[in-house]
Length: 147
Image 1 (cartoon, rainbow, N blue to C red):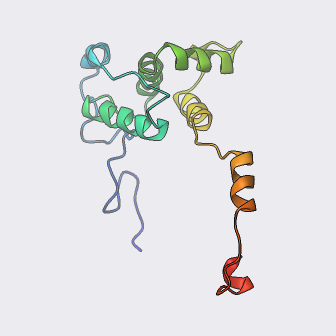
Image 2 (cartoon, rainbow, N blue to C red; image 1 turned 45 degrees about the vertical axis):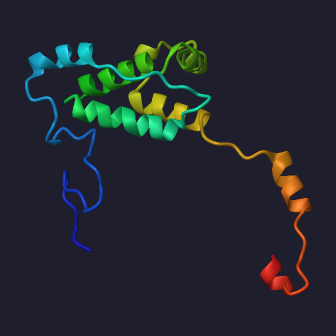
C-alpha cells in the first residue's frame, strides 16, 4: 500500500474537512467572518435524527461554505456554529455537561466527542436478556452452530 503524505487522500475517502489544505478552505481571511455569519444549518431533532449523520452533514456544510480548516479560528468557528445549530435542548445538555467551565474554553473536538457519546445508540439490558431467553436450539442445529 503506498504511503500517504499529509493532505493526500485514498480513493473513496471524502475530503479532509478540517484540513487547511482543503480545496474549498477559506482563502481570504477577511471573508471568513462574513461566511460564518451567513452559515445556516437545521436544528438537530433528537427524536428523529441520528447524531452521527447530523454531524457528517454539518461538517460537509462547513466544507461547502468554505469554512473548513484546522487553524484555531476555524475550529472555534466550528464549535460555535455547531452549538448554535443543535438547538436549545441539546445546547442545555452540553452546557450542563461542561459546567462550571465556559463553553468558550471547550474545544470543538471535545464537544463533538461528548455529543457522539451522548447520542450513541444504546442497547437495552432488559431487551437483550429477553432476546437471549427466547433463543432455542433447533433440532437440526449442532451445539456449535447454535452458539
